[in-house]
Image 1 (cartoon, one colour):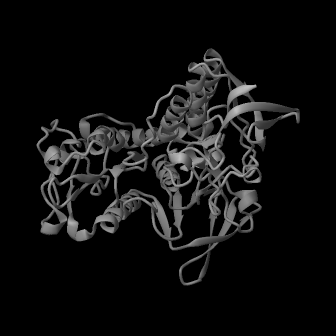
Image 2: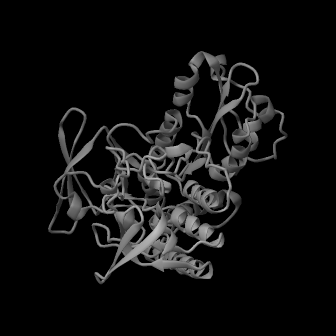
Image 3: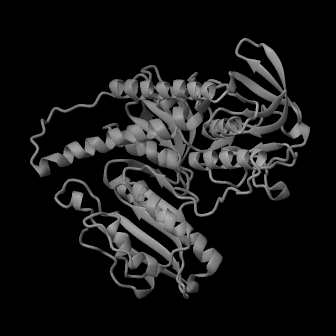
Length: 486
């Protein structure tokens, strides 16, 4: 008999399980990675560790280092013209690092007395979980409480050849050979991040966009990202959708696609990467059959019962992370929600997860960090007449001597209430190390800082972050928001 069974060994599930165990509960974690459509598998730790944030940030760093090598000559470094990049060496090092994290997670579970079960978990009833391991061996677990933390997996478009010939982010980071000329289908942060670092590593990369970039994010910032990527080598096919993928005798892939006028086109690629969205992995857990309410479209768990964001329609079943409906799909959110849930269940705590004003960063070639409302959401919620939006273009000092790359999209936007106390509703930054900058400012935004609180802060000179506390031109003024430098 267990006090707590967590189905899903990603960041949120592991954090929740370890916290519960530290509070004296008998805990088990179930995790089983089903192979991707191309047969890729990985170890314990979930999407973030294996095929998401961690390898993505490392390869993004590899691309940034390539830019730094190009820029180094402006700083007096004599750079040989024959410098090359090895995809195989990079991926080998990244994969070895990820494997070390897999092992570390297993060690941590053991140290904290959490039982790790490498098996698929299915609910029999509200207190019984059936496990099936890779050899087909079944086991029944009885438990007082259950947490669903199975996350999501990439989905593929329903077109001929997509299932057989395209890869997803589940495969890209574990490829043993260079991707070559690549088509990235999608406009999400995953599509733009992957398209960006592939271009940065020297691959001929095209991003196919059905409608808009970065749906759900501030659209002005999204379009600046698209402009930056276009100006720095990434090709875009706008308002196009793939209709068929065929493998040719040369091993390349022939991709047929249609544009907004229904005209048909074709091009050849070495790799086709689908990044058109993700689906919650709830279908195999048998949730609906025992009464857990799911959103009809996303199949995510609807929470919020009894004023508990993570509680499902069944009183002892909870959900955290990417399977919780209408909540941010972010690793730190899942981790914090999981820890707080365990504290409320087993330590008489009352603190709930606050899903508002959660900061995040998109690791595109020009990084985008944000916290709070987008301009579109702020206008919808408060009305344009009730907002004051301060903004500025800027050129980071580290780019001041660089002439070969376009960095004109470095931009800041501060969205405030127009009436006193001029509360900051949203902060958006495009530029180097945007995530590092926004992490600090997010503390202030979450605590209700005003515009005056921002501009009365002394900046650190010369930094990009300093430009935020210097903002003084509003969109309403119609003045030129260009700043000459840090």
